[in-house]
Length: 141
Image (cartoon, rainbow, N blue to C red; front, side, top):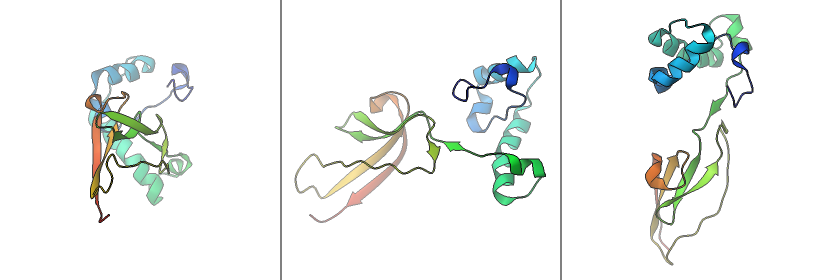
């Protein structure tokens, strides 16, 4: 709500998608402005997953076509550099797809390949964030 500049009194409905639907603190935050209405976790997860499908396929109620769907990145996304540091490439809430560019060099000359590890999280050290993916690039110098 803070990121969207919407106050609790202006929130009419909320759909929790994925693992957020199971986090007790998130459930409590959503229930608080809705006058303590109980949340059916399975229903909210199903609605949250079905909404983008309805928008992308054009199926479902006409009101779903009026919704704007924005997928966002985790808090930060970056690459491992210097063995322990995450060099950030995207900021929090960057909409996807997105294109970012930055040049990197290898740590030794004539290196035969490089393992690129992509991380997501809010900390600067890779030990404190999650691995989102790995890409191995091999080439002949």
